[in-house]
Image (cartoon, rainbow, N blue to C red):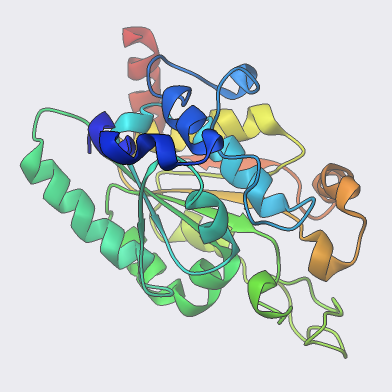
Length: 283
């Protein structure tokens, strides 16, 4: 976990597309950046392979811009739409088998604590709803129940977007999709509530219509996870391709959801609250 691994081999650097060279030269690693600095540095290449208007791509950008220590952060992902964007960032990133990301993250965090006992190394799971709420729900819950010091971030597009549009556990009840022509038959899995009852020290539910709230939630979640315990951030990242709305309406769709069923909410344990107060005073 060093800035050196983010740089291409010198002998081949000039063969890379200009975008990649700019990503390495102007990423958020040389000084502290944040959501308010978006547009002044490069957090992802413009020609990433997501669909036009992709909410997940926007969510990945906002999370990347919110990391309190990017060079000392390891992102753990899994196959799915989130992978396509994460592979186009200059983050320390590891892809796993579908659904086992929290198990892998738990092991890596424990290893990093041993390898760097006097330095914070943040491990962050950044995965879609299918990886967390469906196939990986068991390992997600167990990492919370064991009080692993990792942050789990769900980019919730409410669908299996990269495989044709199947319903996921996070799809809204009644939602009609390409592969759910009669509509989903049961409600969204209450992962946010499960995080609260399974031992997470901090949790937030937010949408891509509120970048500053995402920035605050991600930073708070990562800081709390360093010392107190597991944390969870759930970000609504609507999918224009499978939810059938114009790609320039992604933020509007998210804003409408935020005014309704996806309203902003957060919780924090007393221990985490005390820790954040001390941390804020120290800064």
